[in-house]
Image (cartoon, rainbow, N blue to C red):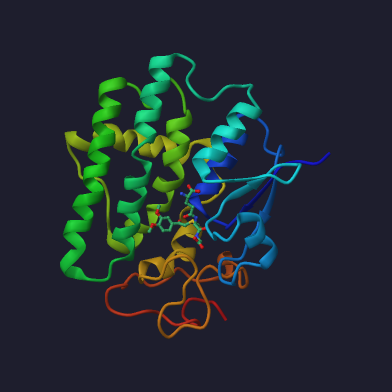
Length: 264
Ligand code: GAZ
């Protein structure tokens, strides 16, 4: 039987959202996955499907129609494979879920700007900008479910939108020594983050893989771009990440070469 195809980049947080959603529905193999190498130019056949844009994931339906944007693809999956339902069914709760999800863009951007920065004079400001996003989430979680773990009674849509980003932010723990401050303003979101990262439906990637693959982001090169002095991206498929050493953490002082990173 033909299935929808998701074209994606390994460790891309946006396609992990769709993987988690299908896993929660017990439909892990309802779509096929096609992996795209971000370190090479996009093939012409793929650019034709996307009509020229390069961001992934994109979903292709069985009859060849194309959808872009992870949140749009998630909603398509939720409506097309409607049971079990993952979104809240109560209209007010559904609205709260959407409100919480509406901050995923600024949240993701704040973490990525922080990890990519190499100017020590800007570190405190970028850290505070990310903490402001966490504080907003803490307030929302405390308001809607002060004593629980999730936004409502289980790992749902809001959780699966943020979890891939919170897992990527392991790179901040490693490269920036970033952790949520102790104390009240972050206790609720810390509990949520820990439970989200540990959820069985979200184990497609782990700490070591993220820290190794995102080394280039930590030295300021995003989306498969090559940092200065390097011939190979930290996102290459070969040598694969388990065979490589843990990268150096001194991102402000220098950029490690291909050999040191185990890329040759
Ligand atoms: N809004 C889209 C969605 O699907 O939700 C975002 C998709 C996206 O950015 N995909 C990336 C991509 O295909 C891979 S994952 N890039 C290659 C290209 O040619 O565009 C996240 C960020 C960020 C930078 C990178 C990423 C990331 O901000 O992990 O913010 C959240 C890329 C500077």
